[in-house]
Length: 284
Image (cartoon, rainbow, N blue to C red; front, side):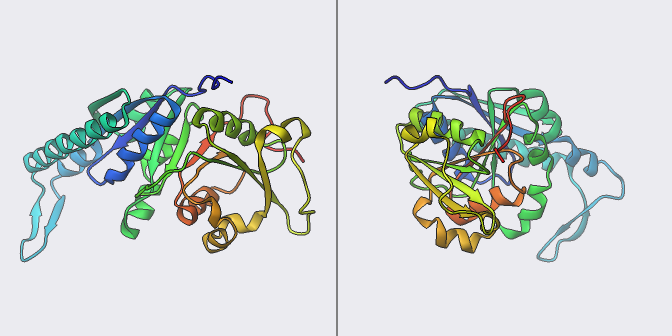
């Protein structure tokens, strides 16, 4: 049976000087698996230049340097060097994965750039921060907020992604969750198995099943208590056999902390998809 047509057409990766290299490799690998184009955007954030232009703005230089006025020319040189390095890494990742890649250097705010470039059929990749010091900043950043626009799907990924498996996991809020149908499409495209993990409330029957019309196609089905999805330690214990698989969820089906918990616990990329107009997030 021929693989179904992809519901997506390209992956957009927003790059800045703090972006981990692993994000480029993951973006290229996912683009290869799903047969998508890859667009890399190195964003020279104008907010930085606006800050540097303020007369009272200062930067602290360690090792005895003390406080100094911000050097706009040095910032520009540093960003140009970072852009060239990012383009080289991006081009190499695209070449290794044999995908069509385009890299652009743009100047503007991250939110405006992604808002103007992303549209329906795009996947915007958001890479988890590489250190705790960047965690709060990056998750509240304009990049992340812009990525949550309904026009594009969002792929949340760990900083380092190794040995990505072809198998797909759909984390469903109920038997009618749209992530199940999307998971089936993705598993057919990647020629991998599909496991449906259905969240159930405390005290609900663990024997709850998915709609019969899909039972023969979807393969494995299991349940997990809903509250455990936000607990990385519990997930590592309960779903450890599903680590490093491609996870798909419906946006808005769970608390926003759940996708990050899954990324952290399973070292897995999580694709957040928008339900089609009129399509319920889950069945009661």
